[in-house]
Image (cartoon, rainbow, N blue to C red):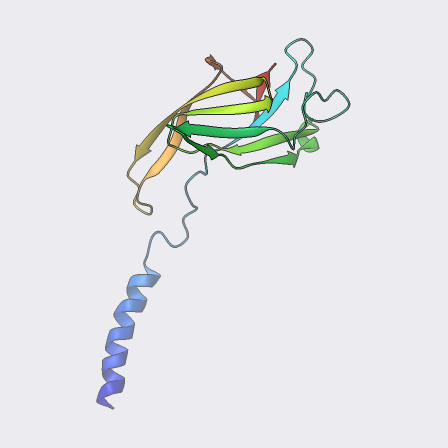
Amino acid sequence: MPLFKILIQLFIPVFAIYSCNPCKNVDPPPSNYRAFRIVSKIDGKDLVFGSNKVYNKNLIRFYSLQGQDTTFLNYHPIKSSGIGYDSILMVKLYWNPETAYMQLSDGDIDTFNVTYQSRPHKCFPTLTEITSFRYNNLIVMESNGAQELKK
């Protein structure tokens, strides 16, 4: 019986602490994914998806460089016809380094400059969010949930 009382005395505080944890139902921090449409600067037509495509979505690469090391960034196409688009590319931009590249074809490489801000968060070690995004040194505005990269 004394062992049972000891277990109960240990279990109740642990259960109380866990059940009062303010972070247990908190959504994870933003993933720093960005939605891109690569469009013609002349007529705004999609250059990756649809009948006017110029670039093959399977050959596009997003990456960053650090010295001699190349880190390929995660990306995938998403069907988004619900917002009027054939599709978009979702790219995860990492917080370091702050320069990333998009290679559309062998001779066509563009630059992303990304500024991040880290701040403490009560439920996560730090929260890092994108505060500024530039494409080929131009600010890109978001339209219907995606950023249009004009070529």
